[in-house]
Length: 182
Image (tube, rainbow, N blue to C red):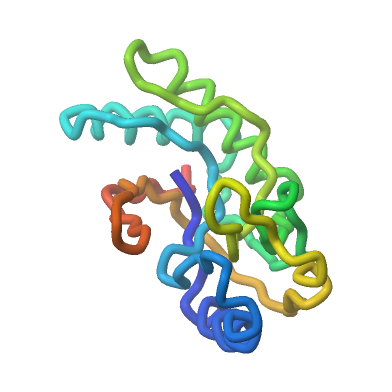
């Protein structure tokens, strides 16, 4: 469950990252088409229960008071999760809306038997790169090299994605969108 990144922001960020990809070919760079801001992560969900997930997200949107129609997102400072993941932070308006909505979605899904959800605080970000292999580490200078863009976009919907993992590149298939309007 996530917010997408606007196409114009994806294009700008992709151009800014091109030289870094060349300088750091040993990293797993996240494909631009998969960039998103996570609201909740579900484990494996049977396709027959997608309607139930959609209902949970719709209920969470209403419960979180997000019936305002949209949330504005802005790229912020870069950061890292340890030595393994590099990202760009995302600020939201109204402030804290992404975290509140993510918590409400997690609560609603957790209340439904058999739907697996990873319950943790949401820290809005766009993942850019990961270290390769179990022992791989991000280069120390990567944080200083990551771009700082003045880029904003508005999200009127949350999207439920199915992630396809495997030997090829990671893919996120959009399944359902849930409007943020009341």
